[in-house]
Image (cartoon, rainbow, N blue to C red; front, top):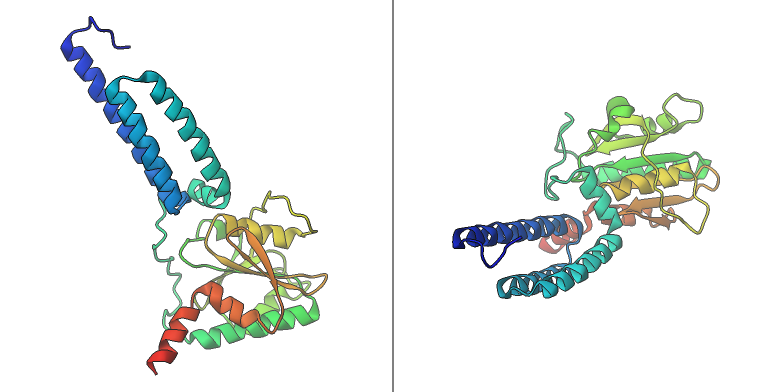
Length: 268
């Protein structure tokens, strides 16, 4: 505590240490918000609270600082609650970069994307028609290298025949998910931590696992229901059911290839 009768040097040191601590705390909060809540309102709120806190600090208004701290804590709690999925991603890997390239597992990078997506569509529709349960996770920017360690390495090209063989009932790799990076099936029989989020409808272990991996990564996961043959996408903590006709269009949209295709068509 700083007292009026303390030497000037002591009070100055207290002031500098306190100011550096405040700047460090707000710097950490900015870093966390950049990872968790990429919305302008979050940074406007944090900027306003920082301004009033520093104003109260410079003017020696302790009660103002306490009031601003309480309001800031409540606001930040609301922001984090509204972005629970991103909070889980941040906790799982706080120093990951959203623009980071996914790990290269060895298969040739140059491949026919349209043919790859067609192979996936063929496999998914065949699984849906046969009511064979399946879960396929497509890695994007967030690396799943640590998560797939509990699975069985495959390192095979993506073909509809291989996917159908993996998920055929009775095979050793039938249970669990297939993780795909680019045009390579990296691993099979991978088990994800299921979501703890409550849902109104009835969701099985595959759907909960798919939602769980989508909460901690930007991966796109396709789920085929064993009971109904329904096809669903799990992305960013949400589950969306689609019919067979729209599967390819929705899949391309989630994988981020819609814009590039439209640009190519306009150039031609």
